[in-house]
Length: 387
Picture 1 (cartoon, helix red, strand yellow):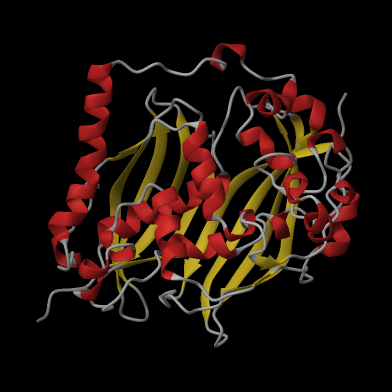
Picture 2: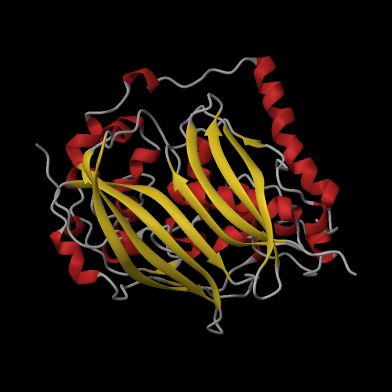
């Protein structure tokens, strides 16, 4: 029977681990690149005329942006300790936002602290380690923007490849009529944000049982996943003072490539260190390598799924609202050829001890076949009508 040796993890828990730093302040085009890659057509984050008329008076980053500035997509503190002959997938995220916004000119830093882990038996890979770690994002003034607790799924490298469903090797082929319907569904959510514009979405007008508008985007492709990949700072050559890491030391299969983001190797051969071309991340873009880790074909990034959830709720809340807390549990990946469909329902309303008016939601992400990709809950702050 397969076993999983997690004994090396214990020595790292509760202790800060190294991180990489940005070399230049955040630029407006970095924010534009991010929302483009995340399929988030909120004018506040890329259109200067719309943003100038907003409460901010300029382009600001979406709440999901901090993860773009981390060298490990949030997973680094959840991937410490050696698990021999293992692979890794993203399992989920929990976000606590302070309300501080990221703007052009900021420099974001991240203190990363491994939190805990547990081993469970799964159908996907047998004994599986669910490991959690905290990312604490601050700006150049030391102000906390976000605490993100990420979950990594670590499992035996042979177990995942043995469970690949060969029926999922082929992508969905969309007819012309179906593509026209996708365009209409995709545009509806963007039009919802346009209709809200700079107005408030009042807490008073939201009722328990309300359904949030559906958000549809895709079909996903190798091109769209590559666009996502390049929107993360670390995946562009020379953008960060990279930490030295030992991917073999955490148990990754050398056959997948162990020089990803290696600062020394990057000087002589940056292609070899680029996860889009070679390394543990190439399974996202190369179906043959995807199948080695248990995925049927090219698949999306877990950190992007976390951003999709935050953007979905923030886009509905409008510029006068914000997501204060969100949990997302990832159940399955976005695959090439698939659509992503996001829905949510208001399950409660409350006023917290600080007097903030909260809307509580349950949110869900599925593909066009109804296969669940993520589930979770969140609390969104909305303004209350005067009087």
